[in-house]
Length: 212
Length: 229
Image: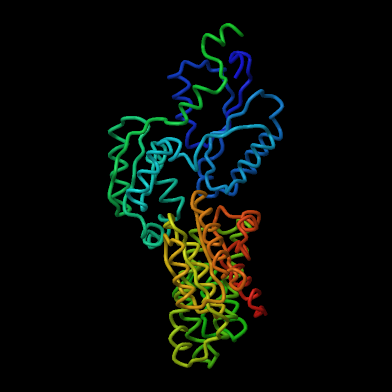
């Protein structure tokens, strides 16, 4: 990837993983200037048709200001439209269909699905903002009878945890209970997001000092 | 929706205004009001097929357009569908008993293997039923064998496949390949739909038709069979 210290990097990410990226930035000892982070609203999760156009808008305006661009999304329901945009602007994204897969890794994610197809996934972020993104986002606060329509085919909530956090664990359990589903906990950490940030050409604290 | 003083008495409306009000109530997801409106039209000796087409299906067509344009979102569309179901609940037994149900064609529909999402599929099924199709719903997580068995058993005019996930939509291509191998595809139009799909994907897997949304899918199904209005 060349001299990491010399690259000017842009990360465009889903708001649902912004906190995780900042956390990893600290853990991996990257400088604050290691990359420019731009985030799109996390509730695009419920309207994936907005993702590719929103990312293209940023790339169109700013691509030439950066050497490399990492997009913190999976395909995320864009049906290949995101990949088409990224190819056009020479940018890369995280592997997998969505954040559940890149946090868990393809193998483990496949195993979980194989074990129970009716798995409803949540991450740390989705647990933290469960009421806003799931309950309100799906209109369940306004139309409680939609619970059955949305979740009839699900059997369990699978919490793919990034951090050991007993408060979030309890919140996730409560969310499963609210949806009338079983609960399964799996600590997966940051998975492919961490790998991507480790291998992406970013400035470390030392590198920043050298180049700065 | 409105203050008591503005309350609309459905029975006071003439037929034209009542149908327009029914469409509005359906748009607002008011199941009880839609039920009542349908009941009144039946009392006024309206044909059940006409109520279905002019009030309910037309109302859902408008809902479909506003969903496509980002004015309505999934929860609201589901409310509208719930209201339509209220009206359909009254009409279905009348249509069945009288034998006057419009017979547009037979449509087998199912969500593909590996996918348990059925909200979109169910909306399409409801709109197809509203358009006069006999709908055979295979449910969720269907391997190719289920589609083949349903084709043998029901001899449909159209087969429809749905997927919500980027990871499951390629399975539609496998089903189409299998239909082609067996010589079925040339005589059986395949319609595909689902949130991550688009026309390019439908073309790439050799699907006959891409159904962008529920209302459009029902319209396209009629076009396929040459029974569009």
